[in-house]
Image 1 (tube, rainbow, N blue to C red):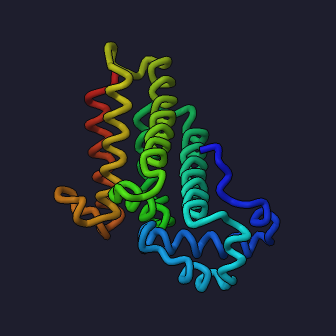
Image 2: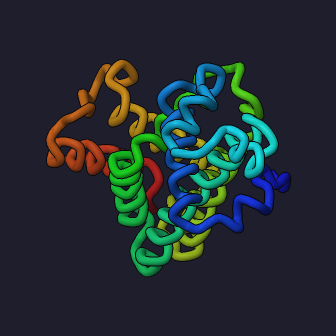
Amino acid sequence: MSQQPARTTFSHLPADKQERVLNAALNEFADQGYHQASLNRLVARAGIAKGSLYQYFPNKEGIFRHIFQLALGRVRQTLVAVKDSTENENLFIRLEKSLKAGVRFLQEHPRIYSLYLKIQFDRQVPFRQEFLAAVRRHAGEYFGSLISRARARGELRPGISEPAALFLLDAVFDRFLQAVAVPYLDVTFNLHQAPEEIVQRRIRELIDLLREGLAA
C-alpha cells in the first residue's frame, strides 16, 4: 500500500475542491462498483473537466486506490478513538462500544461501507486481495490489542487461543455490520432499518455470548 495513487498536483488544490473531487469519486464507486463507474459522471459530479482529473490521478485505478486508502483511514481513526477512550474499561465493555461505533460509522458513512461491500463481493475489482487483506489485517491488529490488554489484566479464561479469539471477534463484527446494512445478508436479526433499541439489544446479546465464552 506504499504506492501513492494521487499526483502532487492534487494535494496542491484548495481543500474544498479536494473534498468535492473525493466525494464525487466515493459516490461513483460506491454506487456503481469499479467496472461500472464512469469517469464522465465522476467529473460531472465534481464540477471539473475530465482533463483536470488526469492531472490529479494517473488513471481510474489510481483514483480507486486513493479512495480506498482514505476510507480505511477514516475507519482507523474511529476505532483508535474508541480504543483510547475505553482504555480503562474491561474487554467486553470495549467490544460493545467498538461494535456500537461500527454501527454509527456505517450509518454516518454509508458510501464508505457500500464501497467495502463492492470490493468484498466483486472478484474483478483491481487490488481486491490487497484491499481485503488490509482490512482484515487492521481488524486483527485492533482486536489483538484489546485481547492482549485483557489477557494482561486477567480478564480472559485461561487457555483461550488468541488466534481463535481474534478470528471469532472479526467474524462476529463483520457479519453484524453486514446485517445492519444489507437486508438480504440478515436472515435472523432483521436489523436493517430496525429501531435503535433493537440494534442495541442485539449488540448486548452478542457481547454477553462472547463474555460467557471468553471471560475468566
